[in-house]
Length: 185
Image 1 (cartoon, rainbow, N blue to C red):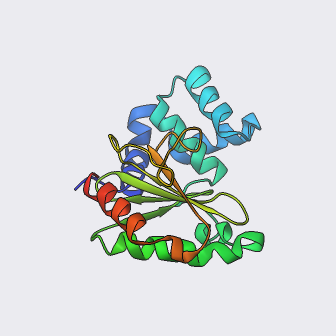
Image 2 (cartoon, rainbow, N blue to C red; image 1 turned 135 degrees about the vertical axis):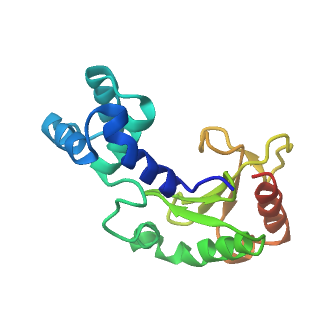
């Protein structure tokens, strides 16, 4: 089975000084000194001005901004489903329950969504509005339907999207799509 994103990040951090000439704390000091506060700008700065590869630059940017699950100061899922989106948490719970029923699932919270992985990502769960959770699924080759939409501009990491407004929307069809995406991962 492939390493989890967190395990891959730990390996990269352990090898960072050998591969880049500096430790993570040294790179974080460089980013802090740059006063850059956007992920893309930090990555560009590290690649352009310091010759860093994209993978290491991306990792350093996430660590500097505390935007990955391993760096967050708060519970990312709780933060996603707080305030005006608090009523959406039962939908999230229903999706997670359906995914876990498939077998081994890694739940990897990010700042704005939760990634679901088997050996690779097969779904994302995102509270997109105050009234809707979007379930993104990797179902390459599956024809879109009225309910199982092509992902379009929603998220390039998935091929399809299902809009969910209540826990009961995680029905037999949605559970089947989750299982199919899980099997393909």
